Structures are given as C-alpha cells and as structure tokens.
Image (cartoon, rainbow, N blue to C red; front, side):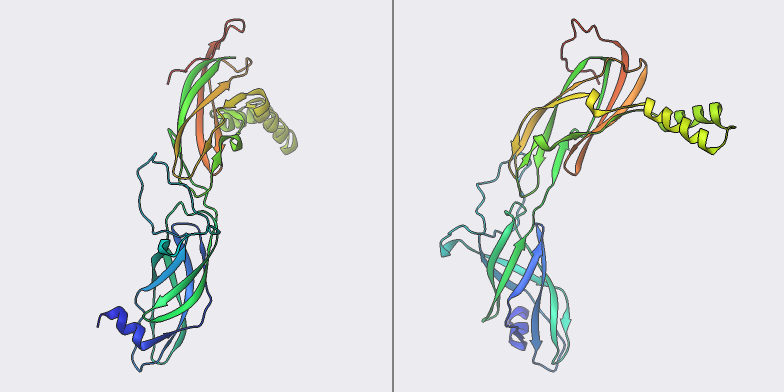
Amino acid sequence: MDRAAESARACSLGPGPFFFSGRPPFIHGTVSVHNRSDERVRVRSMTLGATGLGPHHRRGAGAAREPAKGPAADLPSDLLSDLEIRPSRRVGPFERASVPAYVRVDRFTPPGEYEARVRFGDQHAPAVIVVQESHRLDLVPDRITVTAAAGETIVRRVAITNQGNVPFSTRKAALAPLEALGMLHRSLAIALTEAGHEGHAKFLDRFVRELADHEVPPAKVKVEIQDQEIAPGETKLVELSIRLPADLKRRRSYTSRIDFREKRLAVEVNVEGSADQSTARPRRAAG
C-alpha cells in the first residue's frame, strides 16, 4: 500500500463543502480531516474533480489559448478534470484538523465559481472553487527612449502579452504627465537660490511654481494607441503615436509613463530643436 493510500486509510475526510479561492495558477483553501489512528499522519495528496478546470501547464509566449470553457459551461463527464490537492501539514493522533492546501490550475482559467468534488482514497466531499480575475501583462520593450523635436509625432510598436485570465483592451491605457528629467533637484536648487532666505512660505511657493513649470500635463501630449482586444494567452503588436507639445524646451529630457493596468511602459524623450509645424509628419523616432 502506498503512502497516499495509508494516509487515506488512517484519516477520514470531513463532510465539506470545502472552499478554495485565488488567482491562477495557485488556488488556496482548507480541507478538514480526522486522524483516527494513534500515530502522527502526514496527509498525502488528494484529488479534485471539477468540470471546466484544467491542470496547469506552460504555453509558449505569443501562443493564443483555446476558447475558454467557463464555469457554467455544459461539459460532458469525460471532460471532468482530475487535479492534485497538495496538503501542507501533519495531523496528530486522533486530531481533527483543517489542513491548508492548494490546487494548481491552468493560468488562463476564466474567473468564476466552479463546483467540484474532493476525493481522498474512496472518500468523497463537495467543494467550491472560486477563480478570481488575474490581470497580468508583459510589455516588450517596457521602456522607450526617443530623440525628437518639440511638436513632433513619434511612433513606436510594443508587443503586449496577456498573461491573465480576462481579456485586455488597450483603451484602458493611461498617460502620466511628462516631467523634466531632474526636475526635483533643479526646482529645489532654484527655489533655494531665489527664495531660500525669505521664509518657509515663500520658499515653498517658489518650489511648487518651479515644479509646475517643469511638468507637461497629459492634455498637452496627444497619445493615440491602436485599439486592440488581447485575449488571455495572446500577444499583439500595438502601435503608439505620441504628439509632443510644441513648447517643450530644447536640449531637455522628459520622462513619463503609459499605464497598461498594473504594467508601466516607461517613456523618455530627449528634445532636440523644434519641428516645422507645417511639415511635421509622424515618424519612428531614433533611440
């Protein structure tokens, strides 16, 4: 008799239902067991049977996943998945315990509630698996550095891979203000020089005005992002078009970012000269 069978024979499984919840691939929960023996027992692997859940496996980057089968999908019984539950502790003699455990599912499993059954030897109990939304993106590159003229439009492409379990729309991207590189130290130095001996209030007022002068609000930076819907497991090339304000100061560097949910694309712009507004055309900027 193997060790898993021995632990199932020594322990009885609680009546359930057991509850597991989390973001793929690791879904955590507890299972209750009663050690009926007079020896300390390690609870070995259990099995979870659930319709619509699949085991975790790796996919190559850029490979689109198959159409998702959600928790409410009417799947035949031969598509019932067997996933391994990994308990994480020993149970003392005659102890009744709630044992922490986890199950590893496919990382693109759609969010929702799944009905399941825990099997421990020849014992069975119901379970509920709640798969939460997972928002994970990979950006390549994750930093853009360009040299361009004030008023010019720069165009770049970024590969976005959706590593989460819900679709992502590029319409949700947001641009932060452009800030002059080193603006904090420069503004502090100017404020100290011009108002450092005039009291705290005047110094802070001068410091804040200087900071504002070195920041370019998003409304002045025109950003167009190619409208794309990216499915879980899919990679798409997305084109970004950024029109720089004409009043950016020459020979100055500005930094910003474009937020794609929790992932940030860092942007650094080195301004050289001014674009001719009558002839300026979008171009793929150097750098």
